[in-house]
Image (cartoon, rainbow, N blue to C red; front, side, top):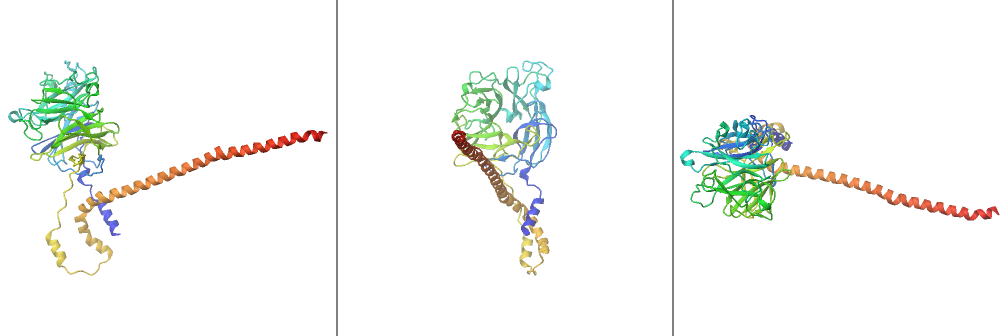
Length: 486
C-alpha cells in the first residue's frame, strides 16, 4: 500500500528538466539548429518555418539508453523552412539553457528578401539556403565583429555555394545584399579540381582553430581556422569538404580527408577537437535519420568509423552540431533538432548534451545530470532525534505524517525511479509483448503446417487408396462377366 501511494505521488510530480525543449512560435516550421555562447549567453539559431517559445515533454533518444538534463546556458539559431528547405533563420537567447527569449525571424536570405531585384547570383529567383555556424572574425578584438556563413542552392545548375554575413550583437545580421547592395563578402564556390560542381553539395562550414597555431586563443577562437562542410569529393575520394582560412571569410579548399573503411554519402554535422589525439566527425546518414561518429588522430584525418555506438543518435532527431560552453572551461556540448508527430520540419531545439570519448575511443552523448536536492535542515533532524517515540499510529495517520518527508525526498526518489524502475518495467513489458507475439506466430505456424500436412499428405493418400480400391473392383467385375454370361 505504501509503495502504491509513493508511486502515485511520484506520478503527480512535474516532469524533470531534462524533458524541456525549445520551439519558436514566431515561425510555422523550423529545422537545423546551431548554437554560439558568448558572455554567458547562449545564442540559439535554427532555420525557420515559425519561431517561438514552447516547452514540451518530447525528446529524441540516445541510442545507448542514457538520460539527460539541461545544465548549461545558450543562444540558439534555427533554420526557417516555411515554404522551402530554408529561407532564413531565427534566434533565441538564454542565460540558463532552459528558458529562452525568442527574437524571431532575424535573418531573411537575400535572394528571398530581394527576389524581385535581379543580381548575378539570383537573377530574381528564390533559391533555398542551408543552415550555418558562427565564429569570431579575425579582427574581433578591435571591431567586435562576428561572422556567420550560409549556403545557397541554385536550382538551375543544381549546385551550391557559400557566402557570409556579419553581426556585432549576434542577433542582427547583414551582408549588404538584403538591402539591395553589393555583397560585402566574397562567395566561396565549389573547387572543381577537388569537388564535384554540377549536382554537388557545398553546404555550410563548421570551423575550429588550427591546433597549436600561434593565433589560437582558446579551444574555440583564433586563426588560421580549419573548416568542414558537406561536399561531393570527385570520384568518391572522401565524404566531406575541408578548407582553411586566415580571416574567416576567404577560404581555400583542401582535399577531402580519408575515410575508413571507405567513404560514404552523408551530410556533415561538425568536426571538433575532443581531447589530445581525438577529433570527432558527426555525419548525418540514411532514413530514418541517423547520426554516425567517426574519430581521427588529427584535424585532417584519417577519420575511422567508431567500432562501438557508431549510430549515436537516431529516430525522430537529426543533424547534431558541436558548440563550446562558456569560458573558461569551454565544455564541448552538442545541439540537434527533434520533431514530433506534426512532421519533421515542426521541430524543437533539443536539450544540450555533453560529449564523452572513453579509453576505447567510443563516442557518446551524455546528459549533464540533475543537481541533488538539498539535505533536510539540521534542526528538523535534531527534533526527530530528541522527540520520544510516539505510540504506533494507524496506517492513514502514518501516511499523513510521512507525507512531508516523501515530498522532501521525491526529487531523489523520482530520479532513482526513472533511472531504474521505469526502464526495468518497460523492459519487462516489452519482453512480455515479444513472448505473446512469438506464441501467436508459433500457433499460426503450427495451424498452417497441420492443414498443409492434411492437404498435401493425408488427402492424397486417401485419394490413392480409394482409387486402388475402385480399380480392384473394376478388375473383379471385368474378370467375372464372361463366366456369368456363359
